[in-house]
Structures are given as structure tokens and as C-alpha cells.
Image (spheres, rainbow, N blue to C red):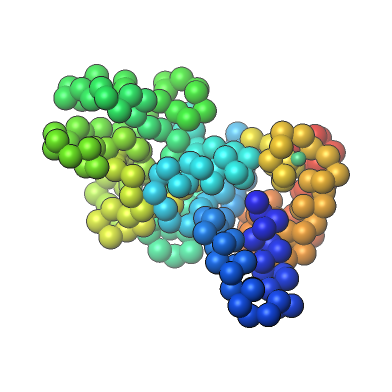
Length: 238
Ligand SMILES: [Ca+2]
Ligand SMILES: [Ca+2]
Ligand SMILES: [Ca+2]
Ligand SMILES: [Ca+2]
């Protein structure tokens, strides 16, 4: 999948404009990765997607060989919030992998309602950082107003850094919502669960294009330090 976008960029200049436009329009339909970061304290790599609905971000995360992030502690919540909520200089709400497991059952009791949410990763929902008034339970008969998906509030909000359940939309109060993807195996660039030479070639492609996906140490630059970081993970088999 990454390759498609990469090829579009690198091959586009050689194509006649119309063909190039068609191919690139197809590639652009995919959510772009706009940032990445490595958290040394839990050895996990995170990617930031362009703004989208929760379900779009969820699907893109799987294509990228990961999942919308699981938040297991205050430290992980703080890392994600500090790293991405003002990424690029503008405020961002952040989608995480928490969602309402049963859309037909929605308690009006807040304590009970909190237990209705679970992680995409299937890990136990032992840690939570709900805003004091969430998750709420809109009572409208119109299902599109029901709030099944969870994001971290952006820095400009009173409840910044805490969680809110929301509809499947790409912005709230005019501020965009960006998916945060957690990548389990960084060297598996093809996302097939195996680390082999095809991953090496895929990394080289991204590296040569300066793609943010190749910024493995998350410092905003694609350079030799990232190449060495890749070789380390590649040798380690993940
Ligand atoms: Ca429910
Ligand atoms: Ca809510
Ligand atoms: Ca692979
Ligand atoms: Ca880098």
C-alpha cells in the first residue's frame, strides 16, 4: 500500500498528465501518514494519520501493519498527547483504538457505560482517562448522533488530554481528528507479518523518497540515522 503512494510520487513525473492524475487520485484516496514517533519506554512506534473518521483511520492502520493505538497507562497517554496533539503547530484531536463494543446496548449510567468500551487490540480496558463527563449517551433516536468512538481532546479544549466518545466524524468543534496508529513490528514494512528482504527493499524505497514512514527515530528528518535504526530492527527480526 505504501508502495502505491510512493510509486505515484516518484513515477508521476514520467507519466502523461492525465494518466498521472488518475493514478495519483487513486493513491490519494488513502490516508497519508504525516508523522511518526518512537517511544523508548514501551518500545512502540506510532504513526500520525491525516484527519479522518475513526473507521477510516482504523482501516488504514491495519493496512499499515498496525492498529489504532491502545493506551495502557497515563505515561502512554501523555506520550501520545505530547507528541501528536500539536504536531506541525496546529491543534489536533487524536483517535485511539477504543470503541463501543456493542452498538445496540448503551447504558445511561456513566459508570456502566464506561465498561461498554473496549480496545481494537483486544487488550483488557484496565486503564482509562475519560473526561469527567464522558462517555455520555446521546438519547436521540437518530443513530448517526450516537457516540461509539473515542478520541483524546486537543490542547485548546478545557478537557485537553482526556477522552471523549464521539460520532464517526473527522472534526469536532472545527478542530480535526487524526488517527494515531501503533505499529507492533517496525521492520515489517510490507505488513505481511514476516520480516524478510522484501521489507528491506520497501524501506529503501521509502528512504530514498524521504517518506515520513522512513523516519524511524521520529525526529522529522529521513537520514542515515533512520537507515541504521532500520538495520537494527531488521537484524532483530522486528
Ligand atoms: Ca454500546
Ligand atoms: Ca461524548
Ligand atoms: Ca514483511
Ligand atoms: Ca529520522
